[in-house]
Image (cartoon, rainbow, N blue to C red):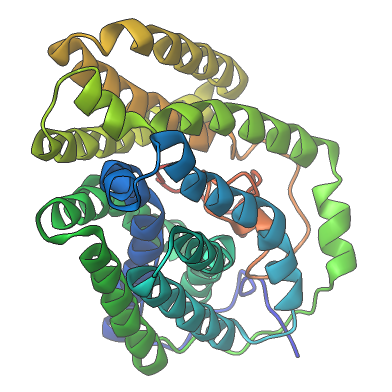
Length: 371
């Protein structure tokens, strides 16, 4: 079955502006749901530790297993869906996503919760990428950059709004309600995709062989290595940011919810900064951001002991973490060959399975995205 990557530069999808706007809003909501399901776990760790009577490092394995599944199984899911129509694949992924969050809400044991999170993680990279490229296919060539910016804004909203709101719901009504809400949101998005998202027919074929060859390109391998190391260091600290802010800095759970939103606001600003650096001095900017990220993470062990310095550090950490993303996807990379709509190269930018090129990146600016 044909699997177009992007419409040809001369192709203008025959869709009304109103229908395109509605479809883009649905795809943005899809990315928002996926991002919220990932980020919210950080804020729920203290509750899960108390409910399951397990130490925080043990409960933190929920984040570890999720990341491992995204990294290892994400590309396999991508390859398995190369011949499936884009919209049909997204619907299937959303169905699994709903099932995974329902299983998390109903988990009767900690191991069952781990399994539910691993099921959810299977959809992570591929659902994000499919939503992004469907958006590209539904707009004229001149508006593709804006389409990607709109869809990836859902990821920013997940850090600024989704994760803090999910944490607040967990604090007041229990962590299971958080997963019920995410499952309900995803179910609504699934129905909206079925009704409102109608991408044009695809025209190009691609196979697993071309994807593997692209991933072995030196520039792609280099960026993958940077992503693994940088994001590994970032998420080692960020995974335990909620208990750190409560137990070391002395913030209340409600204050931690606010600080998670502060992290998201920093990420929005950092994404804009990273975009400017990528346009003018990509390699110098990349080195500066990596050094800054390392310095902030090292300083956090000291600044976390005072509330106001901890809050400032959270803001700066969010900014540097997000600034890294556009720098890993500059337009100066060698132009990629066409690739399937849910290639690992279109994965969420913060995922370790992602790589630098967005769909048709030679024609479009790097979209704003948070980690």
